[in-house]
Image 1 (cartoon, rainbow, N blue to C red):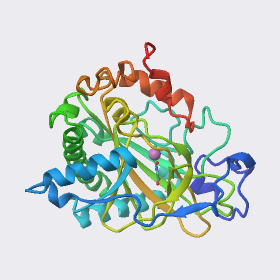
Image 2: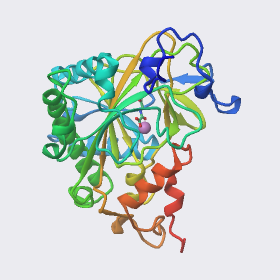
Image 3: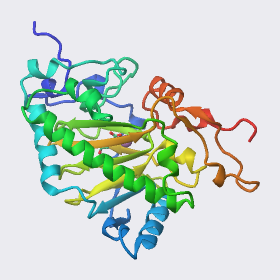
Image 4: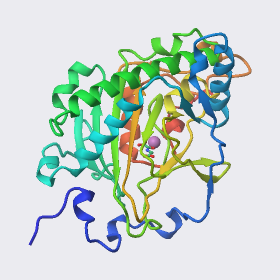
Length: 346
Ligand code: OGA
Ligand code: NI
């Protein structure tokens, strides 16, 4: 008898059918033939213009995208191609390490600040997801980098460099988003306490029956904004007007999306939109979201400047910790937990 496999990557080799615990009920399957192909319908914003006479135009584009789509792509974002390629390379190398090496940092405890795990929350979920993931806390770097994987050898150095660049990009986007809401440039920055930054490295192995399961089922992101780096394999889909739309990778761009906390801060002007990851028969896929977030003790609520008689505060104030615990205990439900924090006097 061989030991049961903890990680999907070690279970899938030679598997020709999706094991039963990964099979979704018929009413909850991806229906991959019923997906629209994105034809540039998610805005692609050139961040070059943020510095110079066109700043106002770019901020307008960002504001519109946050309002209408909740998602946009950015080019000329200031993170070099070689940094991005290094990040993707070490991510791939990590998931090719021998099982025994990877298992050294395996944990299904969501409180662990560095851990490799599988699916989403195997302690609570009924059906598993076709994904392994390495999750790292990234800010402040010096508090966490010691815990990070030591293999492949350049992991710490390359991932740390990627993280600090991703953070710089997040901060520029937060300034632009603040301005797009008519708030002071550093308004959002000041609401985040000590700030938090987490990174997931998602590994989706090829799947023999991709119509039966998800990489990640539909969800909104719990954090403030997400900056997603993906390799060249499609898989991300966004819900728009009740239809799933595939967002195919464009080289040298990132996908940016609004999370629940931004929806709250903007008093519902900006939307935290449902998205999912699907898998395919042929190719593994790697995606690397950077989740920028408040620190746990930060108090989040609608910006007072965005609240008036016509626009009453939609949410009550709460700490990010409070929200995060609700989110985690609920599991990755299609319903976000925003409704739990609605203003009761509303
Ligand atoms: C996520 C996510 C999408 C993807 O990790 O929250 O939505 O394409 N990932 O992997
Ligand atoms: Ni997500």
